[in-house]
Length: 197
Ligand code: URA
Image 1 (cartoon, rainbow, N blue to C red):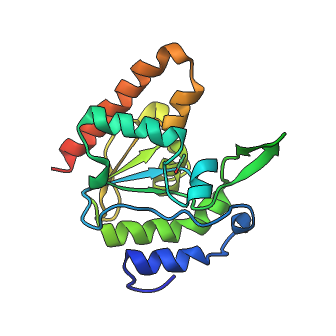
Image 2 (cartoon, rainbow, N blue to C red):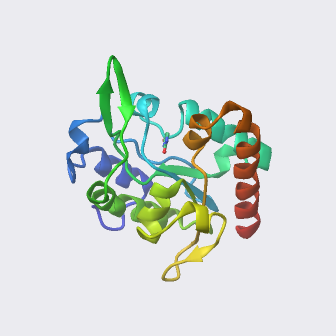
């Protein structure tokens, strides 16, 4: 972990990270992207299949849904910094497909220094965790989305941190509930943007 590195230096260093075994599984480190001046940082769980191939966060199906929620909330994606709690794709094979596998505590802990470094450099006003995994990485393992969704937390003078549903949870849910769940995420993003003003 380079001391006092900017985003480019961190990205270069993270590309060679071997702090956990996931670097053997993923194609590449998927580092965060977005402006250093972003007031809002979005933190997902880990790159998916598409992100692993392209090397960019939230560019697959979940990313398209996130883009819609941001659009509905009136937040340009180019204004936010988007990253993940874990920066390699953890997967297991199912037939010809690579299926997402949830990162464990050890993998999250190994990657946390990168996330903390991104938060230190970007210094956003609000961090929005997309899903419980990201929220647990930053707020502790007792975090429950059902109980704490939309609450604003603050740790050690850092940015305020809140959490909403992960777009993949919407994709996994019943199609007839998608519009309603997406509207809920857009509402949470709108509230985060108001808190970042
Ligand atoms: N899901 C995530 O949590 N992050 C991504 O980048 C893509 C899908």
